[in-house]
Amino acid sequence: MLGHLIRLRKPAHRIVSLVPSQTELLFDLGLEDQVIGITKFCIHPSTWLQSKKNVGGTKNIHIDAIRELQPDLIIANKEENVEKDILELQKYFPVWISDVNTLSEALIMIREIGILCNRAETAKNLIAEIKNQFSSINNSSRFTGKKAVYYIWKNPWLTAGHHTFIDAMISACGLHNASTNNRYPEISPKELAKLDIDYVFLSSEPYPFREDEKEHLSSFIDSKKIIFVDGTYFSWYGSRLKKAPTYFKSLIYS
Image (cartoon, rainbow, N blue to C red; front, top):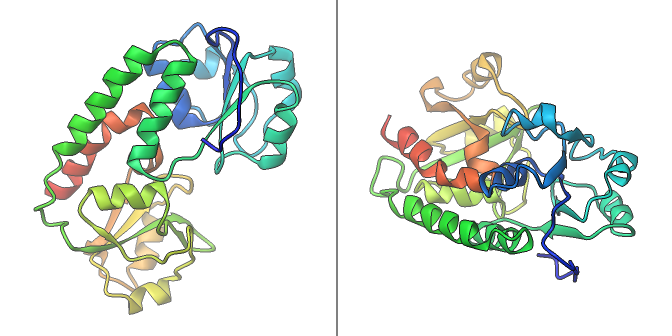
């Protein structure tokens, strides 16, 4: 998705995934036997944490461990992985890199990985299911036109800004992202108090927000506006998307 050309002489059968959401996609495409290496953050499916080789974290890949596996395809992501690691791996192996900031780009990613891994028909069916699920979200809800801030980190208090995949999912809920055009701007609790915000989302990842953080923010904004959310449904752009609309509707109507 960055315009690089890779060539596979046959469908990949020794795959290393460096992206948790795309690891889950590989599982749902039926590639249990083909995937040989994943990161320590690839928690879905949980069984793969024991059965697949751990190749480090998304930001600190163990390149020697990947070399030992001799993959015929590595699946990476522009934002989640470190450029110097990817450039090093590209010297030895085909590396397919996703760049996903919108739902349409996520569907392109699913289609292309399906083609690369000889699962084109399964990917096509998954895409149709995701489209159908997202079309079922009713934006004439209590969220429509409301403004939200989505926190992903503490100290500094970072939010998901515009032009991110999280921003696309916020919009899918019918909400307006009140953050800025920067991708991950800092909005301190004091600054938050000055904004006309309807909802504050505290994500479960990458920073796992807890009651302590909610209590702190409650000094600056009404606690009824603060909602804990499962970050995987807002930031994972693989097959988890088929479950995301149901989760969003549970937020909208609860």
